[in-house]
Image: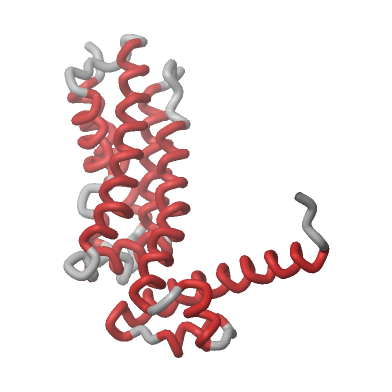
Length: 213
């Protein structure tokens, strides 16, 4: 089926408006929280009429769900790419784990990631199913992928992993230990020296526990 130029332009315009609404809504929700956000404020931020938001995404509750699910794609894509980059046969395992550890922490430290975590944590009672879909399932995919990469490294004889999934969970906890607390969920500056010490000590602890002797 061929589409006319008018139809293509109209479709692109709808997508552009939807993108503007989602981006504006994330900013507003992030600044004032779900209870303080209004559709009027989001419409003003997006530069669209209030009925346009209802036509594209419904009311405030549906809009919040759509915003969180949309933002979660990027939130999980970056750490997923980081763990997938761990080679099965690293020339220097410590260097590779440090690289992956730093990438995971940088993903966590982005302004968008902090905003997502604060919103999810503050609204878990109101949107428990959304919390599960965005936080738990996305994190599970990253964890499962890391476990698979670590298992490949173990097959090459560099690691001794009785339980790759548990080892993956421990790695992620070690390289990010207390950083969320120290950064007050992104509301307080986090010195690079603290990040360096956390990631380095986390990798060294992991290797002491799982590197083959």
